[in-house]
Length: 142
Image 1: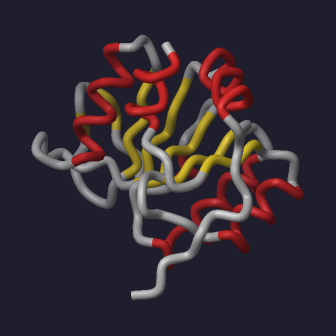
Image 2: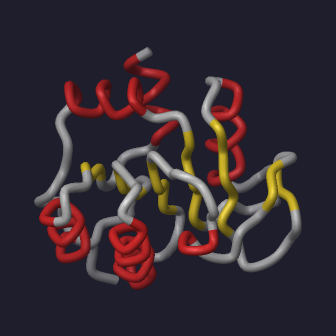
């Protein structure tokens, strides 16, 4: 597998501002399995005071929150879309985030990079963080 190096990314100062201005985080690929990284990160973010919105193909609730099948289905403002999906799914998720018109930030987790989709998000006015963990970054900065 060929791994991309992130050429579009936010710096630490921008990441601090992102967290300060974020209240709702849609987590694309939030697994109900407590041993999965997406679930552990979501628990941390919930405990840190963020509203978590699970986006997953199955389940009705995860971590006490209603599950949506796609980013497009979420009927209220999303501040951040945190992506735990394979690189080939990133472009579609970012396209959904852009189409909504109310998403401020798209974030891909450690090991996940799609520079083409990230550049498109940036051009649409979204903040972009790639190949970083929301839990690790938040814990280190706050």
